[in-house]
Amino acid sequence: MSLSDADLIARVLVSSDRHAFSELVKRNQSALRGFLRSLTKGDHALADDLAQEALIEAYRCLRQFEGGSRFSTWLLGIAYNRFRGHLRRRREEPFDATQGSGAEGGASVDPQPSSDVGQDLAAAIATLRPEEQVALRLCYRDGLSHEEAAGLMGCPLGTLKTHILRAKTRLRSFLDAYA
Amino acid sequence: MPEGFQPFSPVDPDDPKLSLLMKNCKTEYIDDDGFTARVMAAIPRDRQKAGANRRNLLIGSSCLLSVLLIAVLGGREFLVGLSAFILRAANGPALVLPGVSLGILPVACLAAGLVVAAGVGYRCMRKAIQ
Image (cartoon, rainbow over all chains, first blue to last red; front, side, top):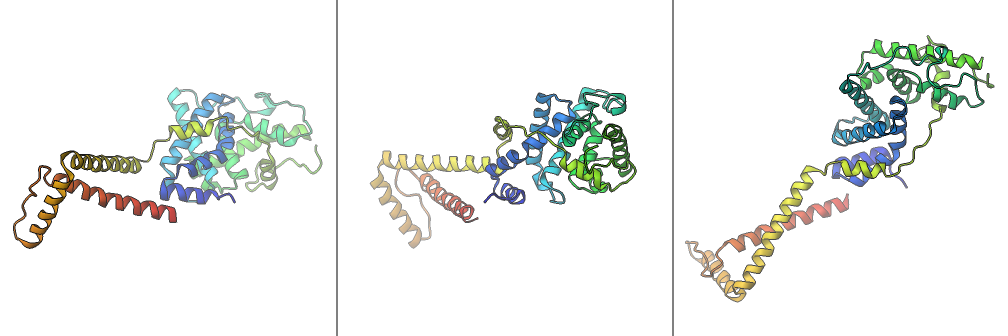
């Protein structure tokens, strides 16, 4: 019988069980790396570096995990903050405001609808701005309240709602192709 | 439009259609390919554990050195001296070093080693029970 995430976390905290943490990494690596690959627009090496940094930080700060959300969600919050830190370090313009609109032909989404809505939606989400992707994911996939998601992303509640509204508007442009 | 699919409203804060879509949104599984091993290799070992390991190593070396010294410098003489010392300490008021060339140091190291070994053993047993 496999242990739950909570059991594994308890083992790490009580007895510094590295095998338990290794199991947590194995369980979450795909989602975490996929999430970061999406944020980094497919830069796999950068995504893996950020994922590794996020996991090391998670190990160091595991005592701060209060269990209010799933471990995977908490991990995504750390990864998102790492990604933001990376953008700050590179002194890049964080987000290109012109990208991500399906109506403007942003990115590589096929405007022709295919039979696989899930796949098309994943591609459409990948064209959104990073903060919009994260806000959508936390609120609509991981089931966090807006307040929880804003806390995890480190932004005001109003800002989070704006991200969601913009993301939904952009996604609607994409999904209109199905109409 | 696929069957049963309706575009969601961008102004509805609790959008069940979007929730459903997001939950069904396909994400490709990424093979581990040694990623977990790399992460675990990069994670620093627990400081407390490293400190305990260093302490155990020190105590272990002291014990080993003590045993070697006893063997090299004459075990029988040492034991006789030690028993005489214990008897004097129990009977008389004055504590004097045993009349052997080793002095009290190896005995103290041995005693400390035994105490620490007992402590480590106890902790290991507790971990095993947990």
